[in-house]
Image 1 (cartoon, helix red, strand yellow):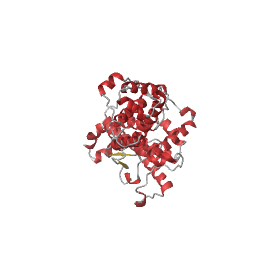
Image 2 (cartoon, rainbow, N blue to C red; image 1 turned 30 degrees about the horizontal axis):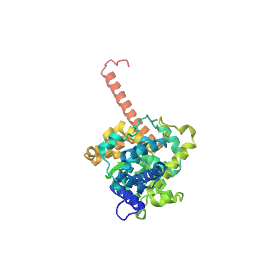
Image 3 (cartoon, rainbow, N blue to C red; image 1 turned 30 degrees about the vertical axis):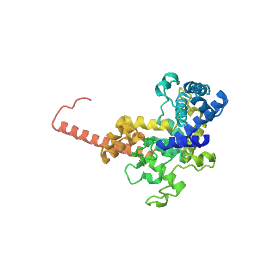
Image 4 (tube, one colour; image 1 turned 60 degrees about the horizontal axis):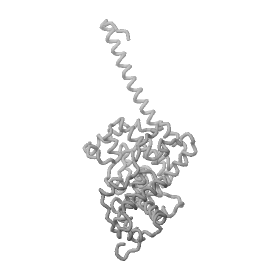
Length: 370
């Protein structure tokens, strides 16, 4: 044990050190869950405390790799999915290292086998499916879904957005994702459709008294989708971002449960409709119109960011506006505007066609049969 520290202090120091790397609350919660499983495992498997287990490993009474193998089997029998299992084992490796136990990477790879992560096909979301969800959702959930579908934001980024992050003066409206809330730790920008802008404005007016044609200075630091429920107070106080995510996710699951034929499940048994699915919908639609690089950059995938930032500001906006009709879900004003443009172009073509016919007749040129 580190000098003069209790097991509880060692655990807290370890969790804080993990949080320090990325400031990810989710990582801290995941590792906390891993520690809970590990404590239960140690008690059942070895009938001892963590401190006693560490002492036995250091004295070579227990083999560290055999212990980790047994932990993997324990998690597998508890039906922990491979991806979660890998995260838990990774966390425990770090935790044991924090106790001063050496774990050789090559020996670990050779001696500890982890279940393989299998990739299964997912049911793609369609505009019709998303519209049905929107029609049955609360204003808060509607707005969050529209944001995800039109901007590619992660749910963890959505629940940390402040009003000051939204540039309503931009055309299209621009969202600035601060480095501290972005998953990769790099700030970026994305856009939203007119349809989403209108929904967001209505939501802000309804819940925060936001006003058009006003600087709304008193509201700038308001977290738009902050959790307001008093349930699960411990998570709310300790992990407010995670609590806000849980609120939106629970709200979505509740809506899906009320529409049985939308409770679709993928091959892996998980629900097909979730916030990451909305983000994938954005990637598919925008990628088809503007190309993969542009879509991936707006979503925050760092590999594509350099290409994106070589574009001029006008070009970034132009490309998004080109895709906006395809990203629009139900805004009749946008649809009518597009129909009007098509109608105008059709009228121009008819006019040119009639002029051509007159020219051919005037010059006694045979008009081909079409």
